[in-house]
Length: 122
Length: 140
Length: 79
Image (cartoon, rainbow over all chains, first blue to last red):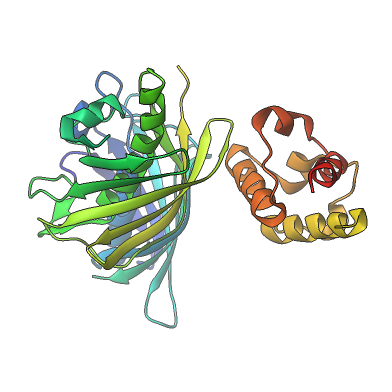
């Protein structure tokens, strides 16, 4: 959705339900013109959207977030300090047809953002 | 005092293309009413719909503008704010381009620079989203 | 509310919200450590105390309420 926010370096999955996507944040994304001027900070909502898009890549389905049960953003992510990230995706089907997502963004054992959400097919 | 468009630059540090609140109707110590008209060129519009990141960012910036109203009244600069946590954010509908969001933010608690708020977003009487959120406001 | 009732309610409310056994909540125990509170969940605790007991704990006082015993006393004085 957001042009040039990130680049996928690698995507690994065995079952199209869980896997890891390695990404690089692009420091020249125009979103940083406004967030914030002179002080680029990767917006939490863009990182959440990046997780959704990675879940789409892993599952090969178009997905929308119906409900975020909990999202903890415990580390300030910037494209200059955290250029390489691992996006961990774990999807499981629920009896009502929705998908439960457990996801996180981190690097080298450190966790920056954790997300528990309910998704549906678009 | 109603704040619209560029007036809101006095309340929050965000700027286009990441500027997601275009009116602050009112703010008190405990709550605020804000709004946003969805423009076609909004970065979070896809296929004519204002999507999840836009809805959440609008809520976060509404909460920031609410806090910013307080700092403005005290003659201070707006603080940088970050989303610390989102809980039970239900997004019932995606608004369309041209829709006018109407949002209420209620302050539940404030501890050590973290504000806990509840938010409700409507388009007319259609409920778009509800959410609980914690915002860090950074002291310089 | 009698102090014993207050203590029982505090313990039950916090144990449920933060998913710990009531048995680990003792007067001498440190609140943050026992409930594993970080800066985000500390806000939830303050909000919960306010909604369950009607008592707001300002930042200055919060720093002094380190143990559950201190919390019981704090709330008892303000009920």
